[in-house]
Image 1 (cartoon, rainbow, N blue to C red):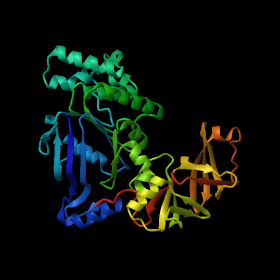
Image 2: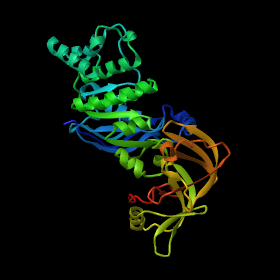
Image 3: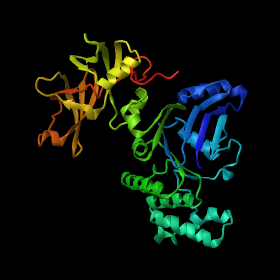
Image 4: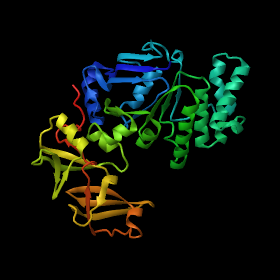
Length: 399
């Protein structure tokens, strides 16, 4: 079993010099939104996660959110300031990295330039003094899985970035670790190679029996790779869920804005109840009754009418039809993306992004800058957030 449990994990970077403590706290506060205490800077706060055997978990968030620090604590490269870490049922807080039966793939390939690809991949097995026949079998099997057999006699400098990253992954999987850790392994690749390598990683996880913990700031990688996604901000977990859950039911404004490309549109709106007791949102001159499932969720939470932040994804806005309630705005930017047109429209006092599928409008894909445009949205696509806290009003409240 390669089950991984993080129980109330915390990471504090203490003040090195008490005399300089005040200055360091001030510097830390200026640089980030991380919580600063008398102990020092809280890089990761109360992190709780139960990772099942062979599950693919992705930690995602902006730079400085604590995702790589969390990964390094699992790897044993960072001390744990508080909480318990279990790998395969064993508490490993004080277990050296080499004894945790994990392997790690870094952002930089970290290959030995003077060694062949074969020797790079075989090196960790030679350190463990495995028989030569077993080393050869493991290296060639990993090379076949990753499609790099023909490069085994070359040096790293003779390979492309994508090929070097495959070698780095191969060096990790030959060890047959319980847990494979990957720290932004695709960030140094161009867009085309990233797409290819994402597909390779998806194929790889089907062929090897290990648990994956993957760190990225790219939410596209998170959505395509992860069984579950852990979204972090300022050292705090914002939401844990499947890609579908975090996309369709974001826990708060941060998650709603972070997940999805282009990001969700937000408006100052009013949540009201109609004469029949149904919830609806008023935005300018549009009155939209929410869907039945949203009615139930809001009623279960006993949400009261009042000012809210309304969120609607760009793909859920549509050009208003005749006789439909509509919001009118001015086109400021029109981007032809092939199968769709991305429009930036000035409306409701903010920049609204909407995606119009070209198949829905035929050949008339011209939206001149400065022209007027009317759009609307359905009650099943509206997300309602608390104006003060940013929390999603539909989700059950956590105690």
